[in-house]
Image (tube, rainbow over all chains, first blue to last red; front, top):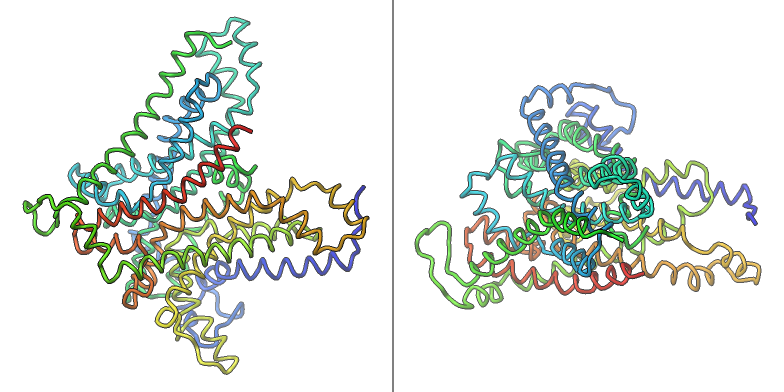
Length: 276
Length: 290
């Protein structure tokens, strides 16, 4: 039985919810608006909300500093690279745990999860030294390796929960029909697994894009992704609000759009299937 | 029935992931434990020697240790209280019938996707700056004295920023959990004359208990490692006012190059995180059986 909701109540709820939502979103909106202001307007002691001279000059300036695009590219390479590498390692593992579970599968899953509980700072020194001694410090390769391992447990877990939902009988049927293991994976499993793999990819690109411990500690200049590049604006000589806003807007826009598509996967991925 | 061959194949497919994760965990952690028993400073190479528990006693007697521990707990607890209470309120609000619910949800979730260095810089400069920030402009508009947030209330300011980043996470998970609430039971209670507060306390809250626990545990894991927000805003200061354990270890090992001392601190952080992790693992493990 659907409950009748009065128009008045619905209007009040709508007003309240929009008010709260806009308040939470406000810092992002403010950054976005400031990115179109002149530097003078940006630090005006009587800030204007919409009625200022809109300008694209900040975006031009930020993009002309050739290093912005280089750091953006670093972010793309590092987040996509680490996620793809992680998937290559994790897909077979998750497949095997979901469809040929052994006695120890559950323990194995829990152990993988436990590696995620290790605080980064506990292994900061050795990883820094290892990266330095192998020449991987401040390289994209080094960060791809580190972020692959950081996110591997989440990737395995997410894939596992998706693969678990694929009915095993379909695989049985394919096997009865004489399908070999490789054709079973290629023609039966893969098409059904693609949505789950895509969600996993999406969430992990987001996580890697925003990762801010290793990207700040293992890069100096050349391999620094946007997280580290934007952090460098905190030095006093970098304090230009409008340009900071333009750089920030460009850094968060792509990932925010991806994120809005992945709300559901976010819950599943970050709670390790504990809340669906 | 899985065949013998597929079992073999399964094990083969599992090996790379397991082996890599094992090495990833054991090698650096082993090195940290080893370093923590050495006198080892990167500025004085070749002087490493075994010192037993000296680094640990230095770490625990460091004047910054207790403030850092208290700051860590304050930050974690502060953010947890704000995000769980706010998250429940927001989840219930979002669950009501309204116009434009999809857009409201998108707006509420947005802060979670902002990278920590961006949110820290935006809050620090554009909102909280005592001269040019928006909060200062608002205060002046109301005839009040603007607050110098990071000089006077550094830890509270960082707590606010981190809470802003994690409130969407709590809201999203609690909202998802709310979807599985038994609506019929809710309506039956309403028919019986139960008011909205009674229904919230006796039906909604117990239903959300499990999701709240998950939120608390997972956030704790991430919050113990908050780093960029501190680096960008206060650098742990003024003094040690906003230094957390993570930040203290970072300063000792990366700025003072004291590998031994930093490693001892790292191990302390690992032990602290493990206490939380045990509870989390138990929760998730139970769910795996269900």
